[in-house]
Length: 65
Image 1 (cartoon, helix red, strand yellow):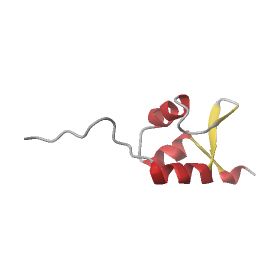
Image 2 (tube, one colour):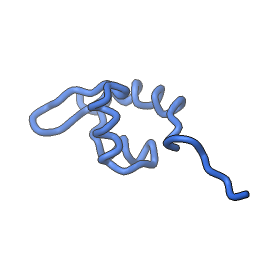
Image 3 (cartoon, helix red, strand yellow):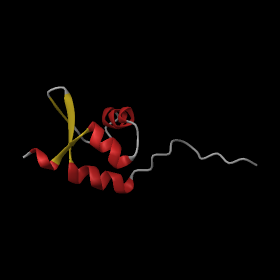
Image 4 (spheres, one colour):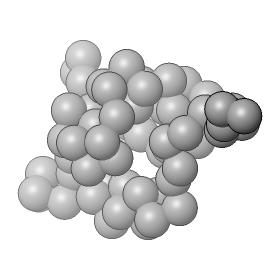
């Protein structure tokens, strides 16, 4: 049953971001998650769809002149 779900650490590995970034995405409503006990869990399929469109860069990319 729980094979189709992933936790914050697994999502952070998939997205290649810090676990706190995953928690921020959950709080902002950008990543759908459910609280199970004291852990956030997400459906693996929905995370994979999100990972296909997620760009981890924040703000404008700066270039040196």
